[in-house]
Amino acid sequence: MPLENYGVLSGTLHRHFRDRPDDQGRWFHVHLEVDAPAGLYECAIDVDSKHSAVGVQWKVFTLHASVLDPVASPAPGYHDLARTSGSGALDYLRHPALADRPGCLLGGHPPRWFQRILDRLNPPRPWVSGSYLEASAALEPILVVGRPVLVFGEPFDEGLGMHNVHQNQGDPYGSQWWPDNGTWQDGATLTRRPDGLFDVFLSKFSTQEEPTDDNGHPV
Image 1 (cartoon, rainbow, N blue to C red):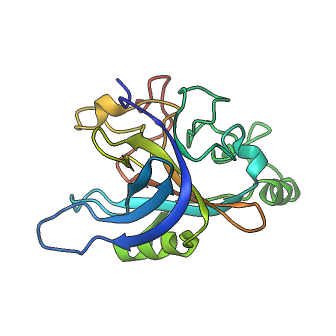
Image 2: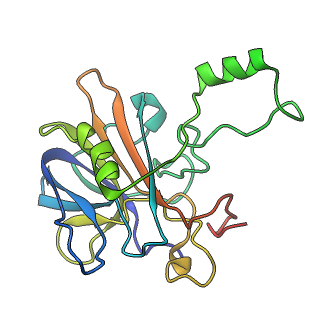
């Protein structure tokens, strides 16, 4: 079954900080503290894995607010989201603003002139792989204190906070995360710039596969 709960936190970025690396094989996060009416939320953004064979991949890009409707300007606080297209929920593989372009069109590879047009209209956004330091360095420039922030993921069972702020589908059969697979429940970190555009950070684990079926399981 999918995540127990899913939604978006809207607030103002208070501060951010990194976990301290240690030798215990812990998950490594960048933590955000977000001001909202209910109090200060802690949001844990995964930038590494405790399993050496499971790397983290990420993307950073900018989106216009209009493509995020109806959650581009929610009231401050946490909001549950229906796991459907058009609710404001995110899906890395299905949301028009997040999904990569099809690899081939017109029955095969398009002509170069057509590919150049496609690249201008919808630039390719390949996943980047690297260390937790590189992932942290990619995320932190968009974490400007005082900026409005949207954090998509699963709320804490107790206390104020958000986790599972990463792709939440495509985990392989037999893994401990297989039961959490689902569509339209992916996590993300977005901060709103003064010009109204959103800077976006997406992350996933290298073991998560695509495409996925209607239950979010790898095909």
